[in-house]
Image 1 (cartoon, rainbow, N blue to C red):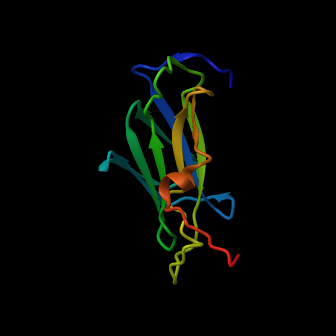
Image 2: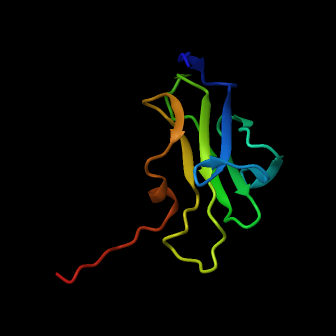
Image 3: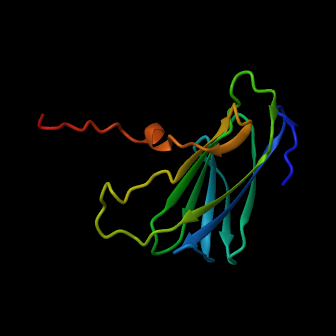
Length: 147
């Protein structure tokens, strides 16, 4: 897709997502969309096609993926514009959410909430998944050695 410079103010991001199980698209799951903690929309996906959402700038959205028998998955989308950013190179983002079977025992190794945090990157001028999302959402664990 050709990159097009877009002004930051008043634009929407197009978010496209799909649920997977063992890397294969699935159907019969729901996605609830929250804006600053308030539920604003929900969709039930009957087919394996991608679901498309539009989100505004300077807001925090949460996408909650749910399917019976599987652990809920969360995507956080933070569309706050970094100071000084005047244009965006792209206003789309496409992601896949891998669903995991329901846990019988809750362990820290299997907890992965959220699945991803999306942020506007000032240098790249795009909405992208944060490589540091684990630091943003999990407590820092201090590792002590016997030395």
